[in-house]
Image 1 (cartoon, rainbow, N blue to C red):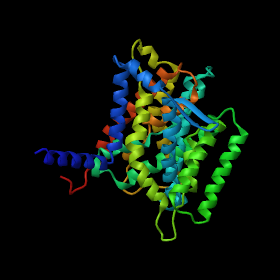
Image 2: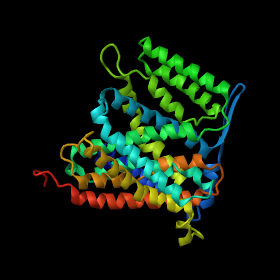
Image 3: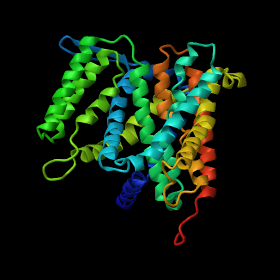
Image 4: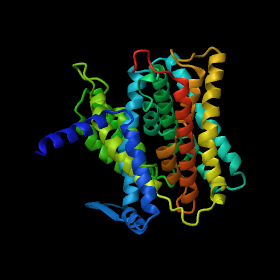
Length: 397
């Protein structure tokens, strides 16, 4: 008697997971849950959960971290592995494989990172500690941004979707460079050399035609440990591993695409939502309107909501006027402006960079308030504007 209901439930879940917007919806629910829990009687349990000590020991090797850092350093390495795979695929044989195709979203990403960072700096001049967070509003959360755009369904021109994806990919690439250059300290030369040696072995396997993923996965774990011990942020091990994964095998199949396809649901529906749940919880007890005017909060919110749209649209306008590129087919300036607003949804990436900027919890509240305010404004205004900017196809009901 319950079988038809169970079958319908399974089918419904399967259909939901196929939705392009599903990952953004799950991430939104995880964020909301974190906010509810951290402002309820469960706040103590929430803190205990994140502080739960987790240790890994293999012989003399010992890694001990609270659960929060295992999520931020460990699980997010898998997220960055997926990002690295996407970047490599697009640059080798995708939408970014030619200079002309890549020019417009690349310059838009540069503008969309530079202007928010400058706005943040302007809001925090004279505070050297706060200035460590300059890169926070430069980030774009690809899952949330694409999820909001997907809520508009078939009415969105394919050129607009590709532009947003390409922009977010270049933004992620910029974030990787920023993390490696500006948020690395206390380097261990020995660990770095070991990491380089492991990566070299992986690249040699690639050149020798080894296309099974297992050797790369095992070496990837060793690489992660070496990078973790080196002082460079451990998530960069995921990007490094992606460089070594073969694009094609002897039969013309793509090991990279297979791995990307395997990882995507795990990252979209487990890694990113768990990161959001672990990092979005902020207690509003005692928070006043003045907290939103704090230099960190204001700089992040203004950077995401105002800086992103100015930077992206300004860079695209300059690129088109100089003849270096043109708007994608079917894309209007109003539609582009709406996508520029969506690029201001920095949520996951902004929170992640914020965890690297400060070692203490002193800036946790203004960080989360700024990210939530800027991302929420960008998402709502961008969605409303895009509903006006794009029209449904003629055959749509």
